[in-house]
Image 1 (cartoon, rainbow, N blue to C red):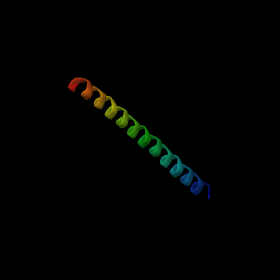
Image 2: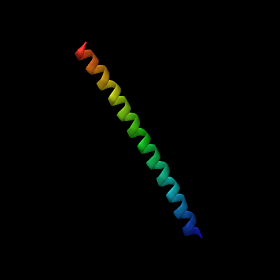
Image 3: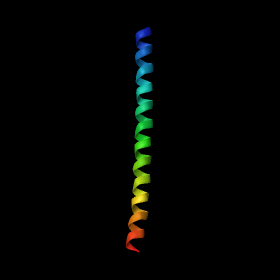
Length: 45
């Protein structure tokens, strides 16, 4: 029983960590895209 609880806890934590990492990655990609867009506009205009 204890092993099952440990497994479920580990699974939830793993999913939580993956969620945070994917959120941070998408946020970073969004910021990079915005900066690239502003830089491109400054160069073109």
